[in-house]
Amino acid sequence: MLINPIDLIIILGYFVVAITLGIIVSKRATKNMNSYFLGSNILPWWMLGISDASGMYDITGTMWLVYALFVYGMKSIFLPWIWPTFNQIFLMVYLSIWLRKSKVMTGAQWIETRFGRSTGAKLSHISVVIFALVSVIGFIAYAFKGIGKFAAIFFPWHISPDIYAIILMSLTAIYAVKGGMFSVVITEVLQFFVLTFASLAIGVLAFVTISPEQIQQVIPHGWASPLFSWALDLNWSGIIDSVNNKIAQDGYGLFGLFFIMVVFQGILKSAAGPAPNYDMQRVLATRSPKEAAKMNWFVNVVLIFPRYTLISAITVLALVHFSPQLKSMGPNPDFEMILPYIIKNILPVGLIGILLAGLFAAFMSNYAATINAAPAYVVNDIYKRFINPHAEEKVYVRLSILTTIAFVVVGFGFGFLVTSINDITLWIVSALWGGYTASNVLKWYWWRLNGYGYFWGMMTGIGASLILPKAFPSIPALMAFPYIFVVSFIGCIIGSLLTEPDADITLMRFYMQVHPWGFWKPVLAKVKKIYPDFEPNKNFIKDFFNVVVGVIWQTSLVTIPIALVTQQFLVFGIALGLMLTMAIILKFTWWNKLDKSSEETLPPDFEQRVQSLVQSNG
Image 1: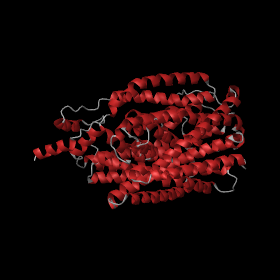
Image 2 (image 1 turned 90 degrees about the vertical axis):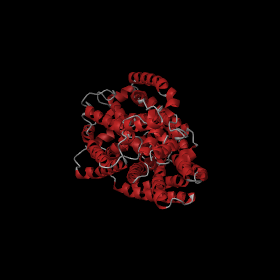
Image 3 (image 1 turned 135 degrees about the horizontal axis):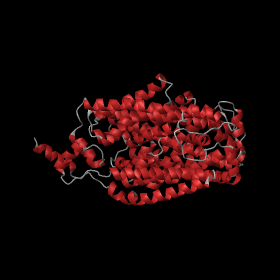
Image 4 (image 1 turned 180 degrees about the vertical axis):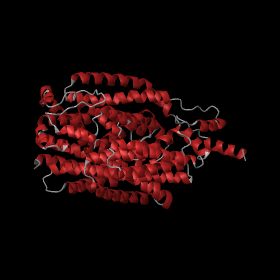
């Protein structure tokens, strides 16, 4: 495709503005480690929420979601649960509050809050760093595959997709490497507004130009309903026969089983808290635990409607205009080409440039946030802690820049090896996250998990996530999660029970500072000896209720733009009513109670009281 000069000028102009803005604010970021990684904890929650939302609006994920909606229709609202997308609700309701109370810079540094400074804690620290680095490389490869494939269709130069990926990802790295969190957040706010405008514009275009009758002619029975039974019951025969083959390959034919699996996985992954990536970094960058909760609520508010408006509009246009081409591709059509085809063949000049600028902005947001998180684990959690703890701040910042560059290069290498967006997506969300989940669920809710147990759970889980897909390729990626989780869980239990519990003072400090609910009775008993009036966290039922209400609220938010653009007005009305009802409930059961649930619970005299107790006991 020879892109129109007007569209090319819009795209290149946007790149110039975004990179220039990132470099301008970079001086603010290089004062010290805290300003580089957390923006000095002065950025407002709404700005961090927009930044986090923009970082999730990635081009590779958009291509995948368009494919999912095209093939599975309204039932695709549940497919993103494999990540799971409803982890934002767990964070919103209580987990971001617990995490922010730790007052640390990275997820690996948080380990000291939970396990202290014992040998087991050091091993746990290293295991989190290993996981973070493996996941960063995986996400770079994920972005590499999507952006290269997308860019090769539009730019006028005859370059391979992989070379395009290298060029675009290197340009994006310039401001992310130079400016740290300040550059990433400021440019992501700009990117979000560009992307939102583009999404709403194409949504209007699809709504105005495509009639409900046109949509009905190109979809199978049941496509427009979010309801499902044990079987998927979507038969594309006579419309696009090859879609039936794709559904069989995905393994979602028994949709009831798939739903059970994603709910099972999703609850465990969400209860584990955020992985050590840009999502966690945004939580730690907020000004307070209360603002951390608000930030995660705001992500849903600002992200879902524009993103799913774009996804729905592209899908509707593809159903009407691209179905014949997909049908002509034979038994193995490339559904990842839906998004670029519609942009290339359907959209008018000018809107193409704006939308492409928005989509490239989405890519830049996600990728910049990912690589900004990577050096924190190498520099702060390895170099500063174990090698050179007394270096000048400028040394740490320079090393952070070099580390980012190194990870970008390694990620490029893995990007060359990836063959499919869907393959890397399923490996990340099922295999890799399966290795992370057990240790990180138990760390919040079970006092007896110690540093050794955490370490062995993480290492056996990461090892299983790397080995199992190769050793047993016949096991679908989604079904690999339970096996990897069980291996990791056994590692946690054995590693903990064969070693001594963590020090009482470490457990007591964590319990009083973070104040989680769960199985903490022995620790509570010891806390009561010093602070008889200290009360355990009794919010489990309230938090569980708010999570359920929040998931319904979030799912309704997803359904609203899909139903509106596809002109399924009955579904739209039901989803809108559900969303408003759940929002009102959350106002009284969650929002109004944030002050109480976010308050500090570690007494200022804790260290002194504990030391006095130790001395009195000899």
